Image 1 (cartoon, rainbow, N blue to C red):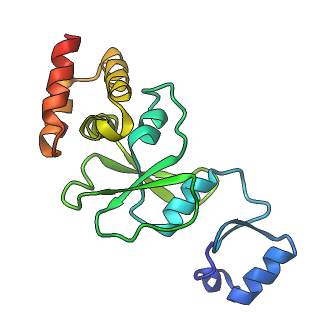
Image 2: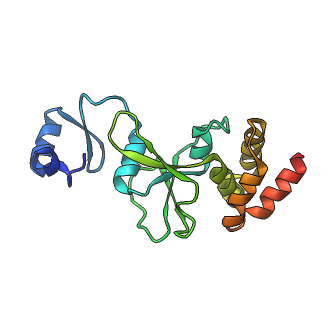
Image 3: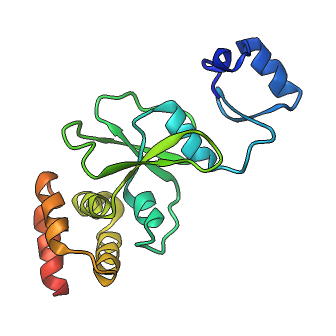
Length: 182
């Protein structure tokens, strides 16, 4: 619950703050509260979904969610449509701006456990294509390792190339990597 949505739950903004001071709600981020007895949940996911409804788990975080890499992301990678204001605050969320024309390609909504919220998550194919096109930012080794694991699990190269064709700067490095791995 946010301070702006407190009225939907029968609380005024000041009532929410009083309830938080009494321990009935726990502040997880600036302006975002959870009931003190709420089930365990990923606070970064809740904050990202509360701050931007289009928030989508991407890059290293998406690859980790799909178990395609062993690396533990230093921050939660979240994509938002280019032109959206990037929220300030939590340094454990890395905000990325993705083109509006391709933003929803390979995007699914998943529930955030312990809440009634959902957050976007890119498919394994989209995530691999994104790390190849942003390999200067995230590292070529990460992209290669994710591709190897995806292929080992039975991923179809034609499906990946289809995604790569729709995203800028992704097709050539993916084709080169697929050729090298073949």
